[in-house]
Length: 145
Image (tube, rainbow, N blue to C red; front, side, top):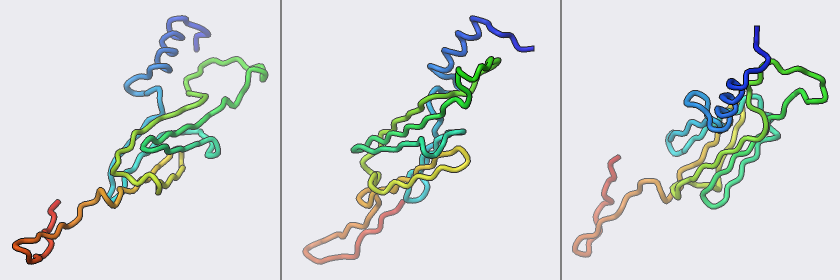
């Protein structure tokens, strides 16, 4: 049987929602990694309507905003027994390095995961430099990774 109210449990749940826990952070969870010539960021957004996702980039700051409204409202005359799912507005900011091409970001939302692919800027990729010695041109020096 579920208890109807426990003030200490309610306070604990409120602090977890505000500051999060190690297993359940308050903000939208994120995985970020580099795959080839792209930086990839994946956000967990289960139950979010695709239309509510808003992604903006200003200079090198990426903002992701999404909303999940409650399906039941206070006027539906319901009695909540347990409420552990997060509702409302979610937002996250990422500070992107100068090595990323913020003009060509691709976004895909599938199965509750928002995946952003950000290409590495051409100026940040390794390139060959030509060596000149005694006025004569030599082959470009190879760059090893």
